[in-house]
Length: 56
Length: 309
Image 1: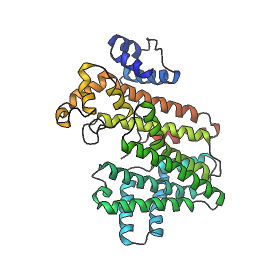
Image 2: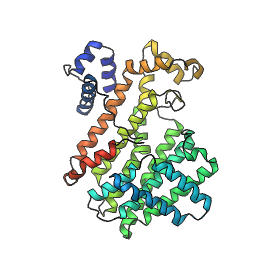
Image 3: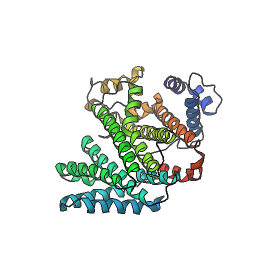
Image 4: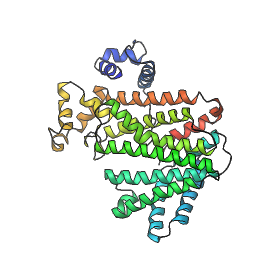
């Protein structure tokens, strides 16, 4: 489940660093969730401002 | 697509001049439209681009786009009145009975504008049926949001789909139907995805602010506040206590920095971004399945991602 995966990631600095570098296998989430999560982590790793689509 | 803005704006003003006769109604409507035009008219742009994408060649798209924008303006006014925010807006500075009246008059004007946007009775009927169906769904969603009755994540996603995403669907599908095409299920689905992605981004913004529009301070139940109060860490229990009314705003008003740090530490900001991105990714996948509209893709994406004033 995505929420639990994110809670586990942020509570473990080592896992988070590996995930940001694309070196951590992420299980328990759907393909769509994994794609979005990896996209967001990649941007964090590259110090981009992250996904910022905004419609207000 | 920005070059269509003056045409849409011109139709909005012309409709006011044509159908409103009471001087104060015209004056306030023009004032509110001016305020709206200073911000963005992306819903109208979506109507125009979908009309072109699906083979429409005439100028009728601008009138239909004006109808869409008049409805969006009316709902923005009512939304601000309900939430009692956006004090800088002209409709929040006008006497409230007048603002309510102008908003309801604009709702009717938007329907009239949609009705006269096509010469074809078949298309007019299809447009009006779609418009009312979408807007009734949106009204249901808005009620659920106002009543703050969301219990869980699925409730929230259902509410957003009704309240916000149907507005995007309305704008896009107006263009499709006006071009003489039937309801398009791919457009229907991708417009909902755009709406979901946008609403979650808005929720992220409203989570991280610390004023009277803060979803946390207002104890508003969203995907993100639900994530926060589901947390089990002892150091974060004050968040749950505040949300459940056990402590007051005075007890938390000095905790802004702690709150922001908590949002980062618990992963709620990451969760919001990922959820929004997931819906946006799905939109892009669906967009790519319609070959005929590929020449329009970059313009379409630029409408969605344009900066607003």
